[in-house]
Length: 401
Image (cartoon, rainbow, N blue to C red; front, top):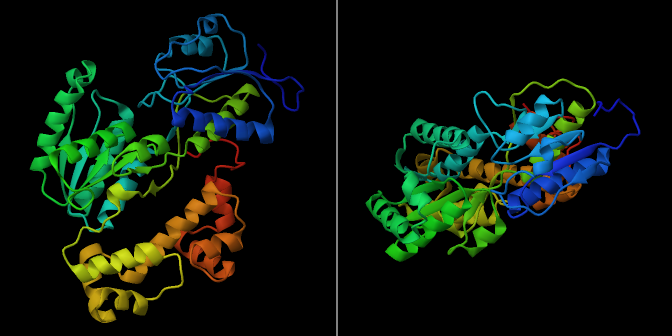
């Protein structure tokens, strides 16, 4: 088909080769729908499919305007690309991608999970990956380990071999995982490559009688609410922001369908934050006063609290608490309050349509003007600019590189 000229009345024909069997895929589709609500419509082909389903055979001869794909096998999509049909890939991250590829920044994912643990006082860390060599995991793992080492932590790794995944021997895998968990220094914060692996680690801890989160805290990636709540205890997980991924992919494809030349490359955007559930809701320090202060801060940071109230809750003088708290976490109690408030503001800006006075109220500020000054001081941009750039309803044209 011909490229669609600007301001044309031609409705683009677009194939969405994206799984509907997983929450992540459905979040991507929802992000695409939000782009179309602003810039559409498209004539869309999509159907219920699993992650490993083959591409529809008609793609080999299809003459549509564009494709967005999360297919494992890119053979037919690459043929379409060679025939001049714009294609955006959401799966095959590599040093030299065969297609324009939109992906969450894996470096930030690894760093944010590591930060989640280091700010809670952990000094021992574990990484539990997946079988096989995958570029997305290599980047994520490297960033996690680098952050751990930079902050003086020790790390330990569990990597399942290809055979354990291939033969599907769950019990055999759990035995090996239990042995690894039992040998780890405690308390330890473990990053799991994805939610299914996080559920598996928590099951191994339960079988071995290892207390979670006091001895082993676990954070995974994807934030599938079904899997995270199915886990026992509920699993903390980083939200990759699938809706933002879908929006960015649709924006890139739209530009390509209108004639903009986009060469194969990786286009990265900022992922979401760690959604804390019981599996990591702990402060790994021996000092009980610091632990009490940290717990009080987590529960009250988005209310009107001050250092005097924190010291009272911890049962210690303000000066002594600040000294011990900094020694354990690298921050003062009020700096920890500010960090939690900042994360809360970012979450509300990216995940809701709340007006700024409501965002301020729910993040511990009496006036939204105070919140805006606080936010700009810590991020360099205003809350409005942050929402426009990173929000799930963002209207920016094209991926964040």
